[in-house]
Structures are given as structure tokens and as C-alpha cells.
Amino acid sequence: MMAIKETVFLLLLIMLPVATKAKKAIKPRAWAANFFDAASDSCTDRCNKCCPAGWVRHGSSCYYIEDSKTFSMSVAQQKCRNFGADLAIIRSAEENDFILRLVTEKLNNAYGVWLGLQRKADSKLYWIDGTPLEGHYQNWDIREPNNSGGSENCVNMYRGGSPGKWNDAPCFWALTPSVLCQKSI
Ligand code: MMA
Ligand code: CA
Image (cartoon, rainbow, N blue to C red; front, side, top):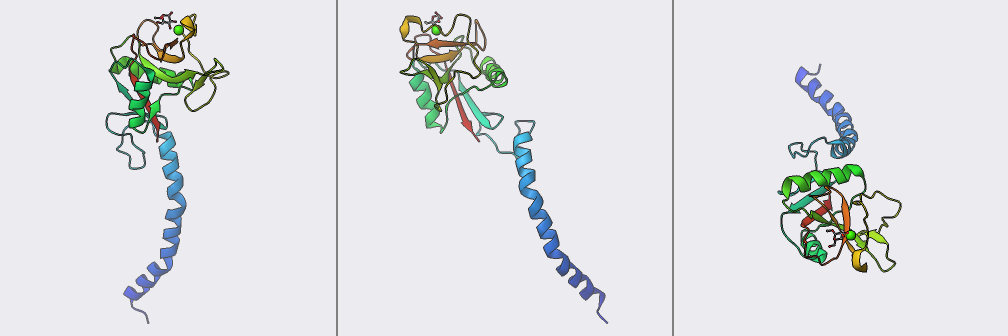
């Protein structure tokens, strides 16, 4: 007759592949769900993807904002690119609201931030990923975009005056919007 010890060992041996298989089937789905559904920006959940220190997470992006004066859009953009990021792209009112909250909290600059939006040779506006603005979410200030002087090929989001509203502005502008960077995680 088999000793109890041996019986238990054999039972465990038989069950081992079953247990391993069950674990493997569940893990990736749980990770995916936690990543996209995570309610907070905290990094305490081991399943969350995190943003670098000083960046704020929203959706599947990290945002960085700097209370600086950059006279030109390309200087702001270069700063972002040095971080492996770029200027922000806004696809919805929800994203615009989030960025306005960030700008309000972290900046003291009425002219807000440069957006990743530019007028191209066809005189239409495109996001920096090449997608056209036409037919998509927009939040222009009243009477904008006016292409004042015929040379407003860049865009800022205001903090003061018309908070959260957009203005087309000269890409080199003495009123100096600050830096907002976005990168996806
Ligand atoms: C005004 C307004 C804008 C324009 C800037 C350029 C401050 O806002 O006319 O449409 O872009 O001036 O300086
Ligand atoms: Ca304008």
C-alpha cells in the first residue's frame, strides 16, 4: 500500500499542469483590463503602466507642462521631442477639459500653451501626426481662427481671458505660450 506522503505527492504532480494552465489563461486579459480601465493616476497597482516623475497620466498618455516662456512653437516642440514626446493633440472636449485643468493648475501664463496644430501650405490646419483638423473636435475662441496678418500658422490654448479656447497665432510670438508635451504609454 502507498504511504500517505507518496499519495499526496502524486496528486500534486497530476494537478500541476492544470494549475499552470489556468494562471496563464487569465493573466494577459487582467493586465489589459487594468491598464485601460484604471481609474486613478497612481502607480501603486502593479498592473498599471506609469508616467515618469513630474508627468501626469490621462487616458493612455503622459503629459508634462512647464511654466516657461518659449517665444516660438518650434522651441517648445523641440523641448518635448528631447523628452521623447511631442506637443499635445486634442481629440475631444474631455481631453480639452483635462488639459485646461492642468494648464490652470500648473501655469501662470494667460497665453497658455502651444498645441500640436499647424497651418500647412494648403492653408488648412493639421495635427502634428498629420491628421486634418477639419471635421474633428475644435474649440476656437470667438472669431478664431482669424489668421491675423496672414501669418498665423501655429495654435495656442488660452489659460486666461478665454480659458481652454484656441487661437491661431504667429509661430514666433512675443506673447509666448508655455510648453505642454504629450507621449503615449
Ligand atoms: C489677438 C487676436 C488673435 C491674434 C493675436 C495676435 C491677442 O489676440 O487678434 O486672433 O492671433 O492678437 O497677436
Ligand atoms: Ca488668431
